[in-house]
Structures are given as structure tokens and as C-alpha cells.
Figure: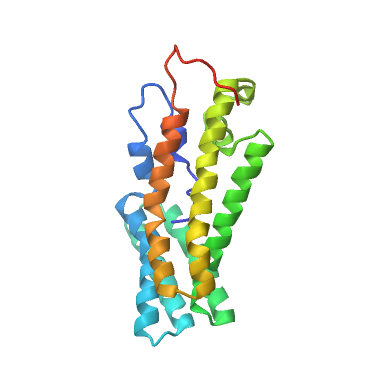
Length: 222
């Protein structure tokens, strides 16, 4: 699975009669198989790196092969392959980088750069008053851009977007020092622990902010 799934579950979980983001979140991460697709490559890479005498390129190829197996499994069961294909693309890039540098920690470099890009994108969207959470939710639900004239919605969408700035920044704060130190095993653990679990926390906190507020709630300033 990619670092940031394309179909944002908040699109499906912000309606007044919706009990919460649970079903949409389950779909966004691809169910149990999607969680495995997200976690397995990093775990396999670290294990292979240890067993294969710390041969970075070989380990990266094995991890990429795991992603391909997941995709084949989904195709065989006629399931959606969007998560597997996104993962294969990232794994292929990681394997290529490692093959060029020979450094095991570079297996995690594309993911770190992607997180930096997402953090910057969300931050810029807040600064220019087009918070990305608002753009994603309102565009997907076909409500146009009138939400930008509503101080309450702008405020909640901005705060929700800040959550994602914080989420991606936290990943960088923890993982970049490990990357610079060449701590491959610790980096693999951190990437796995801060993948789907942290994403789920981000979705839930965002949902709490942007769900339909009580009628008596006063509009908040952006």
C-alpha cells in the first residue's frame, strides 16, 4: 500500500448519519491484506538483509518480489489491485535506488521523500487557504468550492489538514535520524509501526474535527 491511499476514507465518513470512519478506513487500508501489503515488504527487507549477509540489493529485490506476490494473489482472487500496484511501484523505486547506492538504508529513502512531499503539500495548502482535506472531501462529494466562504468549515478543514502535516512530520522526525545513522533494523521497525497504525489515528482525529457539528455550535474563526 502507498504511504497515503488515493481514496481518502474521510470522503465516506463525514455525513451526519454516519457512525464513524470504521468501514471506510477498513476499505482505505485494503483490509487485512492491505495491511499485510503495507507492512510485509519492510519486514521482509530487514529479515533478508540479516540472513543474506547484509546484501542490500538482494534484500531489496526479495522485498519487491513479495509485493509482486501480493499483486498476483489479488489478481487470482479477482480483487482490487490498486494497493498492490501502488506498493510495487514504490518497492521497485526503492530497489532501484539501493541497486545504485548499495546502501541498505536507501531502501527507505523514497518513502521518506514521499512523506516530506505530503507534509509540504498539506502545509502549503493551509497557508494558501485551500486546506487539502477540504479539497478532497468537498470535491469528492460534489459540493463545489462554496465551503471556502464558510469560516467554520474552513477552520475545521484547516485543523484536520494540520493533523496530516503533523503525521508526516512525525514520521520524518523519527525515521530521518535513523536513516542518517544507517540503523536499518530500527528503521524497518519504525516504518512498520508508523504506517497503517498512524494512518488510522490520523483518519480518526480528522473525522472528529470535520464531522457535522451540533446545530448549536458557533462558527469558528479560520
